[in-house]
Image (tube, rainbow, N blue to C red):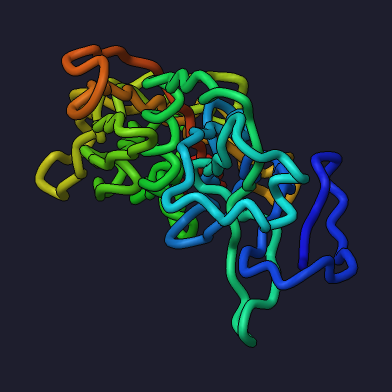
Length: 281
């Protein structure tokens, strides 16, 4: 019989009889971390939860059906009291064991005198749904990495919307009979321009057209007052940080109709070369 203990250290025990049940009791930490992509003009970072932090693991317990025979060692000699339960965690990568030559994830199986209480946090389910959306930072269209910009000339900033870079994006997650649906959409983008100035835009920005000439952007623009020639690499290094507004509601199971909201942030880096206009005599 393969098994692991509650301390998180996996191991293989000695066979203790003709048991047909293989069980794992290993508790894994919640998933987390982030990933970086580099499409277009800047890197885009996707993280778990607010500021990329992992969420606590969300688990549910249910009575195992059918119950294993009383001869199974998991009963530890108990005859009549209690029952065998399984603990399944949302997004869990449980202890991995070889079963009939295949690698599989086995939920934790244990004995309990009575059914453990199950308390599912709908907001945590909503955060799990957001993790499944694979949201990233804004896909920056302007300023362009290869662009050349001029001191005192209006710069137009805008991003290219998509479900993962701007929204809207929807997903759901379920556990212990509770289903939560979440919708995420960028509510604002804060541009740190690299010159000490910041600009907060409420939308994706307006795409510039040559017919606009020297006009200012109507919703997302900036003036550079100095050239970038004295900066490292001759460029201003900036960051576009998107705030995602997430609305969620319970759509199935206990707590139907319950709803709430929270925010997530994702960011993308950019660089911009700014020079000065010279008048020739």
